[in-house]
Structures are given as structure tokens and as C-alpha cells.
Length: 568
Image (tube, one colour):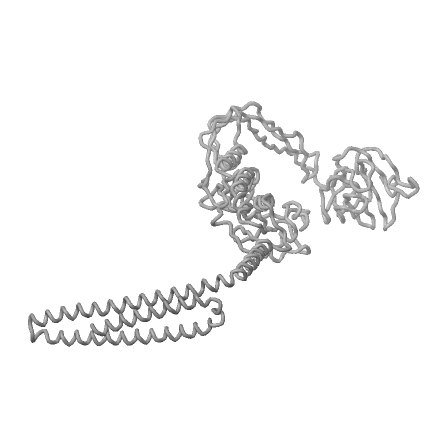
């Protein structure tokens, strides 16, 4: 306990010394500036001495702790007396420790108070400078903040796609609901722009760049094609085929397709109307460009598919002619047919692969319908000795009859795929066609040296000079389609287009004699054909350089044109 009394006395003496020092400092305020540095040095020395005392006192605490441990060891020998002694030691340890802690806390408060006092004196002495520096610092911070605000902005993006720069983020966020509403009205879809998921911002330097107003933001959002939209998809067998604005439009599209093939006739009663495929309307999240309007959707469903098919080459076909018929370009046609080119030789009967347009959806209808139907006429053949062998002449043209038919029809996209006839009533009987087949022996197919008129009419324009130039034959003006006969027997050397003569036939009669028949409308023979005198070889026409329907007839002997009137 003597040691702790010593500490208390020492602490009291230090406090008195500190009070005297503080009092002396106050009285000598006029010399404070001169002695300031000395006082701070002394204070540092005092603080160091105090920390030495703390270290010494801590050592005393350790000694006390050792004494307690020694006394604990004597408990087993002294019994109750040891317990009493131990309790006393614990109390003594607590008193000593408390004294040290009290002294340490008080000393710390004194040091802290001294430091605060020193700081307050310095603040008072330099108050003017502190205020001026604070004002300068505050103004600088304000200027920096203003410059930062003036030169920075926010680049706003929709799903990662940068759209523009705004001054404040609210310029974009406050316009999203209006943009969603306008887009929904324009496209008829439920379009929502999510500010958390769809819109992102990035701080950028905006100085010298265009800053978007709210109107600009609205325009950029409403004219952007990448906006997400809630729409309706028409699926065919589980595959999305077309996307429209909403379910109501999708239903109208399907109804438009039905109306395309349905009849409102009173004579038709529908037993079933439906699609062959599994057709559904399902909600879908998509981009605006993927949405089709009503008419586009109908067009795509009705003609959006393609199916491989074949075209059979016909007489007179060419590669470019087939392109024109099928609607494909040459490059498209050759792409579908490797090895085919514009110079390729094609023959009648050849097969050329093409892709024909087919619908993506098939409307099936089952209907009971009453309709008028044609009854085809039959053809009767009769022999006639008036005509040569191989000739066939129509004596009476056939006429189809008419019948009223009631039938159950199954149709796919308007085309009948199955028919069940329920009743049939003939209204007009058909008239059979009668064709006369010649039995007379054919004359020789070589030249006889005598000629007949190619057309049984008078000459309308003769051989000789006409309109200032030579007219090399006789013209027989008559109606289009009148038969043209071979003037003599022989072999056809040309049957086709021949310069200004149009469709032309030239026959070689032998002996250096040829005849020419120009401006025809139809040709009934081909090069190499053997013809006899009087055989129908063509029909009168108006092709080539012609002023009206007629047959232009020439006789050529050893390469020289002669007057046909001298031979006919």
C-alpha cells in the first residue's frame, strides 16, 4: 500500500506543477509566442517521464500478481487461513490496479485537455487566415463541382445499344412510360420498356457533344427497331411461322385465310372447317421488326413456302423462255439445276427442277354443294373417200352438255382432293363431235410440174413492181385461219420464221423448183416433211411485214423468182 500512496502523492504533485505551469503561461501571454517551442519540448519530456512511470507501475502490478500466485501455493498448507489470506491479497490487488487505472485515465484526460487548449489558442490566433483559406477552398470546390457538372453527362443505352447523351438520368427515366404507351398504340402490341433491365447509363464527357432533350429521347426510343415487344405468334405444327401485334389480330389473320377459300353461296353447306396442321396462337416476346401487319401475315401464310417441282420442256421452249414462264431469273434456275446454263441444249420432254410457291398453312373444308357441271362430249370417227389417207376433217364440232350435281367435296385451300357424288341431273345433253378420216389414196409426194392455187380465192396483189420496188409473188387476201394448200408435191425445206415473211413454209418440188408460202398464222408441217399436192400445210395469217391477213405465194426456178400467174 505504501507504493500506491507514493503514486498518489506523485500524481498530486504533478497536477499542482501542471496548474502552476498553466497559470504562469496565462500571466505571461505577451511572451507566449517566444516560449512556445520551449514549452512544447518540456511537455514532450514530461510525457516521456509519465510513460516511464506507467511502465514502472506496470512492473509493480506484475510483482503483486506474483505475490498472489505465491500465496495461492500456500493454501493447501494453511487451510482456512490460506483462503483468508488469498482473499485479502485479491482485494489488495484490486485496490492497487484501480489506483493505477485511475491515475492513467486522469493523466490521459489532462494531456488531451492540454492539447485541445493549445489547438484552440492556435485557432484563435490564426482565425482570419483559417476563414480566408476555408472560403478559398469552398469556392474552389464549388467551381470544380460546377465544371464537372457542366462537362459531364450520361450516355443512355437500350439493351446495350447506345442511343444518345442526356444531362440527367431522369430525362430518360421520366419518358419511358410515355414511350411505351406510344409504341403500344402504334404497333398494337403490349410494349414495356423496363428501366432496370432495358436501360443502362454511363457517365461521359458531354462537352462539345449533342445533348438530347426529352423530345429527342422519346423520338429515339419510339423510332428504334430493337425494342422488345409482347406479341402473338401463329405456330404451325409447333413452329413459329408469323408474328403479329396481338391475339385479336392473329385471329383475324386466320379468319382472312378461311374467308379466302370459303363460299357464301346458298347452295353450299359446310360440314367442317379447319386446318390440316396444328395451328395455335401463342404469346411471344420479340423485337419490333419481327412483327408483321395483318395483310403481310396473310400473304406469308398463303405463299411463304417453297416446294421442289419439275417443268417439262415443250416444243419451242428456250432457257430464257422457261425463265419467263416460271418467274425465275437465269441465275436462280441454274442454281436449282447444276450444269444448266444459258447455252445448254434442251429437248422436248426434258425435266427441269423448279421450286413452286406453296402455302404454309392448309385449310381443309368438307362441304355439301350443288353446282352446274359440264358433261364432256364424245368423238365419233367416220371414213370418207373424199379426203386422202391420213387426213382428218371435223364434220361436226362437239358440244359439252350440262348437269346439276350435288356432291360432298373435301377441299384443301379451295382445291378438291376428294369427291363423293350424291346426285346428278342432266340439264343439256352433250353433242358428239364427228371427224371424217380420209380413205382416198394419197397422190405422190414429189413434184408433178403442175401447180394449183394455195388458197381458193382470187389474187389480190400480183407479181411485179409495186410502190417503187419488186413484188416477188402473188398475194391471196382472205381471213386468218383459212387453210393453205401445197401447190405441188415435194419436201418441206423450211417451216418457221423467215425474215419479213413471218411464219413461212418453203417446199422443194425437185428439178430446181421451189414454192414459198408467207405470213402464215399457223404451220402444220415441219422441215423434212413429205407433202402432196393439195395437202393443208398452214393457215392464212398476218405475221411478219404484212398490211393485212393474206398468203404471199412465190415460185422460184433455179434460184430465180418467176411470175406465179404463168404456172397457176
